[in-house]
Length: 96
Image (cartoon, rainbow, N blue to C red; front, side, top):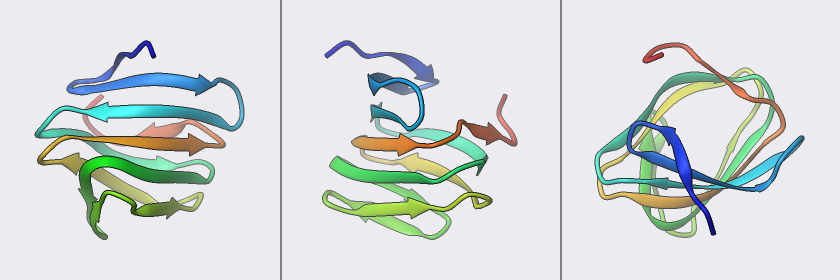
């Protein structure tokens, strides 16, 4: 699978373009995604490592649902790989 840069310390491998978009995201240890708002539904399945946001810590096997209109920032202290799908692109609120 081919990964390409997505954000600083985060790579993406698009599995299905369009809507919904489905991809793998690979976070390097210490990487984070700045605060963003979900314009549509996003679901995340943690496949390796773990990630955290303001609502909790998500180890391997965690399934996270972020409904439209919700906001958060994401970080991975140890690094992780997640399977993610979103129906609309997110709107970054900081760090752009």
